[in-house]
Length: 450
Image (cartoon, rainbow, N blue to C red; front, side, top):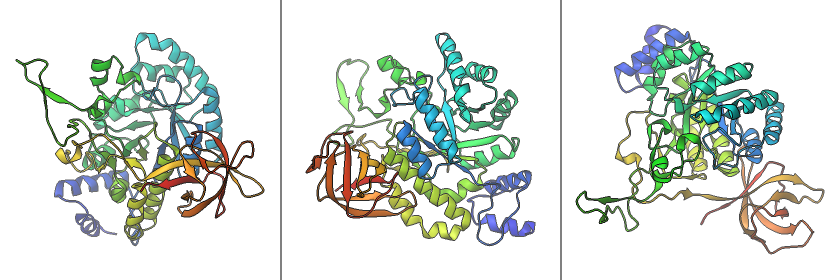
């Protein structure tokens, strides 16, 4: 394809001349070769990176389409309230993923104080034996320790390091980083320019779905100020979700509510990021890893996001026309997650007031998570650890990794001792369940909200 055809093809895709030229510059420097037909022009298939809060969720992410998962240990990560992994669980999870060709990255992205350093040294010695594929790090001191103690493990630079320009990426490459996670404040145009100005082997990882922090790439002091719990040490209390009022300087203690509705206003409450409708633009930007946020989310959230984005990416790589045809399915599926409405964040420019939710801080919930099948006995009963209530005779849904959603009736519920039950009201109770259709290990059971 000649240059005239290249210019013609991409002039339709971008809004202004500057973006078109920056994209073409990126294409030239990356030495990409255009493919024939309706296929998306990319250098390579991007990685789909999925969060996992525990071993069950890790297995779910792997089975439902992840190329890589990121997890946290019991210390030194930025999700202290997440269940996280013991070293033994980390070992089991890494083995499970590696057996299926999926990578595992471990977060160690706190901004460390002096008191943390000895513990980090010991932690990295233990991780050296487990051999995850990479460590996600924000702090230069922690980065240095990782290079000294476990140099065979890749080091990725966390979004907490505020990576907003290509000089920062070059700096981290010179220090030995394999990958840098972009700040959420970057536009697609900036990402393309960044890709064109860094070494080809240096990878870009970018969040494409999940909760958005109101502060600059998560560097927030509100939690520390209000509660003494440091967000940059993994203990954020999420004050951005709280309800606020106004106090006039000369009248302390007199509160003036700013009403959006009768429940108050939520000044800092961002919508959730969702880029399911913009996979072609993401593919064309040169991002190496598409990252889903959510290390405190359920297995259902992980299954839905992994399966939906897996299919959307694969469809788009096969044919953009196929991707467009299946858009309704992607949007329907992603709405099955728990979420706070959706926004495209900074990808297409600076967000405005429509990216915030002022009326409430609650989630939209499409489905209730019932459990994941961990075994099937000879009689066809599904074995699971129940997570939410369901009852005999109720209609529920089997969510399958391949993409099918199967409506079924609950025909029998039996407890661990073999006693029949009318309902399963107790969370984390081990059950055997007979459904009107066959289920398989790793199927997700869920119930549609009415």
